[in-house]
Amino acid sequence: MKSGPKTHEMFMRGKESIPGGVSSNFRYWGDDATLVVKKANGAYLWDLDDKRYVDYRLGFGPAIMGHARKEIIDHITEAMQIGNCFAMTNEYEIRVAEKIKKLTGVDLVRMTNTGTEATMAAIRIARAYTGRDKVLKFDGAYHGFHDYSLWNTYPPVSGVGYKNDPFLVPQGSGMPRSVGDLMMSFPYNNKEILEKKLAENWHQIACIIVEPLLGNQASTMPQDNFLGFIREQCDKYGIVMIMDEVKTGFRIAPGGAQEYFGVQGDLVTYAKCLGGGFPAAAIAGKKFIMGEVGPGKIPHGGTYGANVVAMAAAEATLDLIEKGELDKVNAHGKKLKAGWKKILDAAGAPYVIQGPDAMPGIVFTEEPVCREYRHWALGDHETYTKIVDRCIQKGVMPDFDCREPWFVSAAHTDEDAEFVLGIFEESVKEILG
Ligand SMILES: Cc1ncc(COP(=O)(O)O)c(C=O)c1O
Image (cartoon, rainbow, N blue to C red):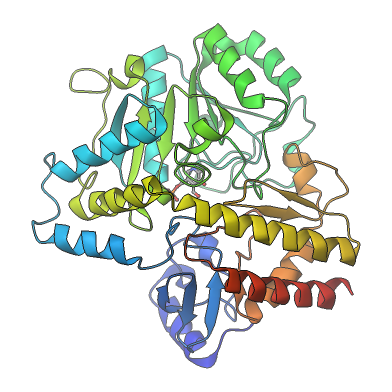
C-alpha cells in the first residue's frame, strides 16, 4: 500500500506538528501508507488524491449508519442552534438515556464522551461499591487507553506466558508498575482457570471487565456460555460484572451483546455506535449500583458529558436503530461472510471466520475455533495483512490491524458486496496463489 502524492505530502506536513502525523497511535500505517481523509459519505471514504475506498473501518466502528447519514446530520444541525455545552442537564440527554434503557434493559445511565472514559468510570464505580481494588480482565481484551486497561492487550505470545499463570504485560512505558499489582488477566473462554483464580482471590476483586466478544481480537466469540459463567461467578462472590459493549453496543443487536447473548452485566459501557460517529458514550447499569453514583456517594463528572451535539447524534442514531436499520447491516455482513468462505475454501489455507454478521473477523489459523489470545496470536497474521494491503490498494478498506474485525454499516449495498468480494478474491489469489 502506497498513498498518493497529495495525501503523502499532507501527511508529511502533519508529521511536523503532530507526533507520528496521527492523533492515535493505532492510525499510523507507515509514512508511505497513512491516509489523510478528504471526505466520507455513506459507505465510502476518499483520500486527498480522490481515491475512493469502500470503508469497513468506519472510524474503528462508530459510523454504523454510514458516514454523514442525513437524518443524523439534520438532527445535529437543528440541535446546535440552541448551543452545545451548558454543564447542565439538557432534554436530548434525558431522551437518549430513556432510549438506552428501552433498548438494553439497563436501569440508569450516565453520559461520557469516549469508551476510555466509560470503562475508567465503571471500574471506579465497581471499586467504590465493593470496597475492593483489583480488576480482572482477559488476555487480548482492550478496554481503552487508561492504565487499568492496557495489560495483556496485545503482548508477544511468549511474553504473556502459560495460560494457567499468565504474566501481566503492559502495553508500553509510562504505565506504573504498581498499577499492575491491582490487575489480573486470564485466558478468555477458560472456565476452569477463572473458577480457580476466583476461588483463591475473590475477596480482592472489585470487578470482572469483559468484552462480550473480543472485538479487539478479530471478533473472537464466547464459547460454551462463558458469559453466563462469569455472571454466575460474579453473583457467587459479590463481584461487579462490567460488560464492555463499546464495540458491540447498538451494533450486534439493538440491545447489544446483552440481548445477543442473553446475559446482563451489572454495569455496561457504551460508546462508538451510540453516537453514530460523534463522541457520545455512556456508563449504564442496574439501579443497585448505578443508583450509588452521585454527590456524596460515588464520584463521576466531566465538562463535556452529554453535550448537545453528541446527544442529538445519539438520539438520531438510536431512532434509526429502533426503525430496524440493523437488518441492513446484518444482511450485508452475512453476504461478506458467505463470499469469504467460498473464496478461502478455494484458496485452501486454513482459516476461521468468526464474529456476528455486523462485525465479522478473519483469522488464518489451524485452530478449528479461536478460543483465546494464545490461539489467535499464533495465527498467520502476516498473510492476512498482506491480503488486506492489496484490498486497500484496490479500494476496499478494512483495518490494516489484524485485530480489527470488518465493521459493516447500513449504507453498504449489495453492489458494494459484489465489488468488495471481487477485490477480496483477487487479493487472496495474488497472495495465496
Ligand atoms: C471494547 C472497547 N472498550 C473501550 C474502548 C475505548 O474506546 P475509545 O476509543 O472511545 O476511548 C474500545 C476502543 O476501541 C473498545 O474496543
